[in-house]
Image 1 (spheres, helix red, strand yellow):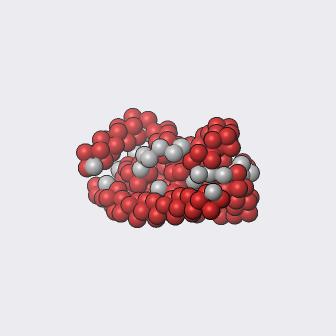
Image 2 (cartoon, helix red, strand yellow):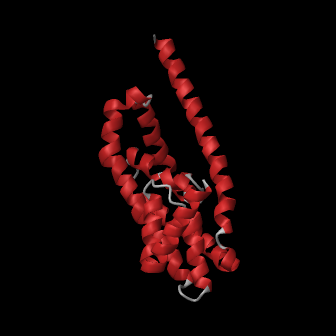
Image 3 (spheres, one colour):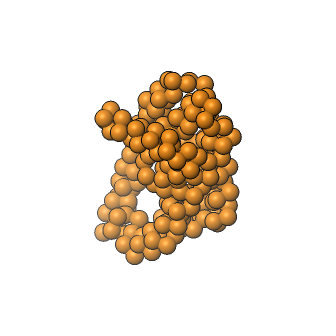
Length: 206
């Protein structure tokens, strides 16, 4: 695991060093497009470069937030134009019914703005929330607005910490990894409960 993290960290450092603000935005876009590229490394390193006088804190915050918004839009589009049709056609084979889709639709129509905003402040969840929002066809304008608004404090906070930590900026990745594991466990438990509930429902019907 440490080897993988080292490779990813070097990739992030090289990309930002070569591309500047564009590198920050591009990497954050990739992270928000359902690719687990850790923003907990991207933004703190950008913050470290702020401390070195190579970037401004406002600049990396905007680059990070805009990158998140672009990547989120791509994941949303994948959910709308690819995933929705697939789920409607084959969802029953992976225990997702039309009723489940309707529940998701109602949830994002009612609570979507808050869900998108606060999910941007959570490790792991922030990476994947856009796809279900697209599957549920949440209002795109609201999705983009709240994706950006939620990404600003996340990008700023990590960059600020990286700036304050200076040469020790990379310690944040290890710290946040503990939150990643905790949230991953919660997601796995939730998925297990979901599968068990659906299997039980199918058994009752039979």
